[in-house]
Length: 195
Image (cartoon, one colour):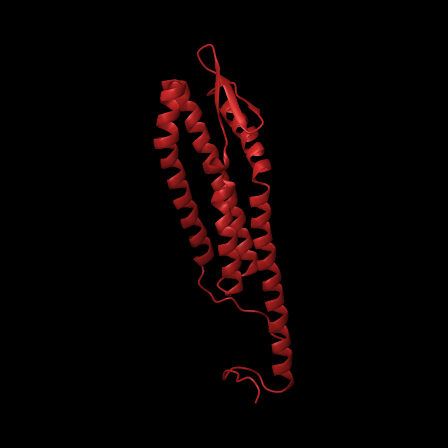
């Protein structure tokens, strides 16, 4: 006995063409989902390189905003403060890469479950990645500014533990809401062309 089809499913040759089209689109969904998960794995494996890039960008942002004349050395950002050079190091726990990796898996799952199209899933994931990296840069700027205002030790304690956590938490929540809003903005079901 063959597979039962719903009442709207075409019969005869149209049925075979529709089934072939559906299988082709499912194959594309599987390929996209696997590629997205691989992208997350690559991001996790290359997080050391990402931290280097984040340090370079952070030094540029701190310098551009005139908080301090900052430079990056490896994954550290240093700047002069009261006759000494101080700064911070972007560790594994401080990188935005670890914040976005779970969204790669989530996007992959939503695409496979046909809750979103491949295009919308990829666009939303890209938007979220940019947003979370920007939030992390804002957090690092707050840390540098706090060190300039309250000194190295006190400024780092206040900003890293309190202010930085607030900025990160609000940023991740905002990113998650943005992610959900874009993915669920139009609740039209994902349909694939048949035939």
